[in-house]
Amino acid sequence: QVQLVESGGGLAQAGGSLRLSCAASGRTFSNYIMGWFRQAPGKEREAVAAIRWSGGTTYYTDSVKGRFAISKDNAKITAYLQMNSLKPEDTAVYYCVGGFFGSSDWARSARYQYWGQGTQVTVSS
Image 1: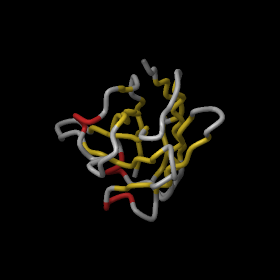
Image 2: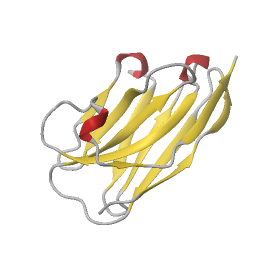
Image 3: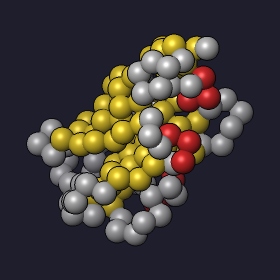
Image 4: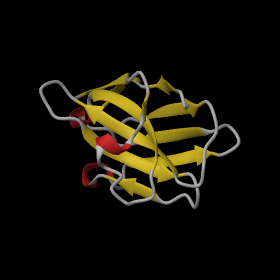
């Protein structure tokens, strides 16, 4: 069993930065992957970024490429999402996710067994 505890988020101005953290309890395995989804009011949930624990392969949705960076600390079993050049359209509740799968369909929410409690990110214009 894995539990995810999120921190970070909050309020930022457009063009600013925020960092999200997600600490996982329990053990990880070679096919472990962590990432974030987000959901804005009235919109569908969407995958934002993910990182593989073995090898460190990263994935990003097109709208955040070049602005967001996902990283990990193996010793702390913690993933980070550095969000730069924030835009008002980044406003959403961000959910940390964790799963055990080896395929590349990282953007499918159903593949993730574990979800964090969610943290609000608000970007003002």
